[in-house]
Image 1 (spheres, protein in one colour):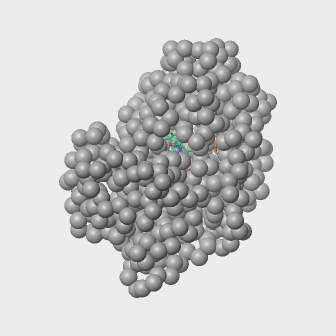
Image 2 (cartoon, protein in one colour):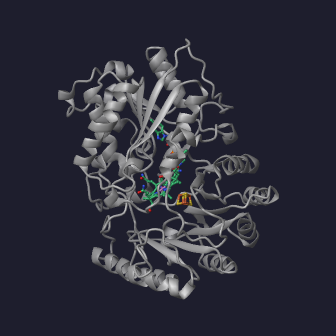
Image 3 (tube, protein in one colour):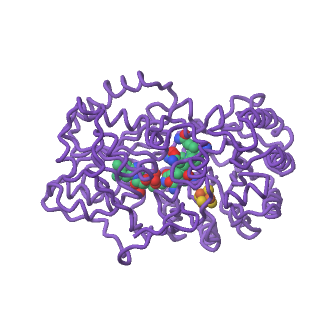
Length: 536
Ligand code: B12
Ligand code: SF4
């Protein structure tokens, strides 16, 4: 049962029965274990935002659950293979032929899963799927993550080389799928929450590469919505980073902003909650992690930090939550616990913190816990635009929080801005410019408003014929959804050039900041004379 909310964007999911505790140990029908290969597609370098070498956390978490169940789950992070290399279709195909396909031949997986945190990676998801199926028609393929969760059955309908789509988080449903497909001949597929497939599963799709262009008919596709999300996140096994090998993620962090002088070494991601109850019109996060925010307990999070601290010499953490500070008490408890245990760590929040949930007490606790770099999500200097975005953020609050953060001069403050919403005007851009110049911030980023499928912004652009591509072609995304050298659509009352001029101004202005603030953050930048670009 899915009810559209008043804005017609975010589904309020009414589960058919109350979700209970999830048993992560899936009992198999026999003693065989499954062998699963999980592949992380790369994001296109030309579209890449940010230059850090991130762990594929979602796939690591899935592989951790498989390992706990006694299955063999391996992750090949192709994104990591290309971290510091150029990438184009030809180079990628060669890598598939020379490295991935021989590995599959040797590994003999029962199933191949392809991840997809970003729509921008879907171009390579398709190439991986097609090349794998051409070579190994008998191996079932599955795609998960944000893009596939948004498009669900349409992915199967369009791409015959993909057999299954898993909507939303997969820690409890992926093992169920393996049990059904690998051990029970596809029995019970219809009761797997959020699974989309062809009737009869991959068994009904004897793959013939010559039919690749033919779309499967809609009536043959089973599309199941996702109802159950894991309530008790403490139950989810903690990411086992050994699965991918921590050394592969080495980055030279010696020049990162580091006021504590605690060696940064290898940064580790922490996700302490899932989803966010807000519905900003440009955000499609809830397609994968559901409508309701769910938390890990403060102790569980600090236990994970402690484990990484003790076993991997981790001293630098990155909280990647959608809305980390939504529950103020939990964050303060977490920070107090870090202090109580005497761990000397630093951390940042690359994914952005909701300003409406920050206050004096929370900021004080966060700084005591090791905060040295915070990204705050302002989005626009115009109250009118923020209101249209459903940001729920007042002008006074932005200044209050920025001034509060400025009381901790060692904390590096980066502000996120979006320009080019449909209603943007010269006046609202001017308000953003003024805010950037007046706020006590150390860095900022400016992104062009991006109509991610499944958002209210996408629907608005569609209704007003502003989209650059045909609606149904958004499933085929070729990386254009990430950073772009030009706006993704033209606002009602501005030209694309107006927006590009604004970004060009930002690119110049940002270079003046290190001198003004005395703080320099080289991430994404060449040297001090070229202080990165506003996209980083
Ligand atoms: C952390 C994060 C980042 C990190 C990167 C982390 C990384 N590993 O690469 C940073 C800060 C760098 C980042 C950057 C960006 N991000 Co970001 N990010 C996130 C965030 C908050 C969490 C992702 C995550 O790690 N989740 C934790 C794991 C456990 O969950 P998961 O990846 O979803 O995996 C689970 C399921 O999806 C599923 N699953 C996933 N893959 C598979 C595969 C199979 C086979 C199966 C069965 C299941 C399955 O099971 C997993 C376990 O439950 C998401 C929001 C969200 N909640 O998803 C946004 C999000 C993915 N980011 C988004 C965006 C827009 C960006 C940027 C473009 C922002 C910008 N303009 O700069 C850049 C792009 C970066 C790039 N690669 O080029 C959008 C993506 C929209 C889209 N459709 O593409 C999201 C959804 C946020 C949003 N508000 O809309 N991001
Ligand atoms: S506050 Fe952040 S995570 Fe929540 S809906 Fe808005 S943009 Fe998305």
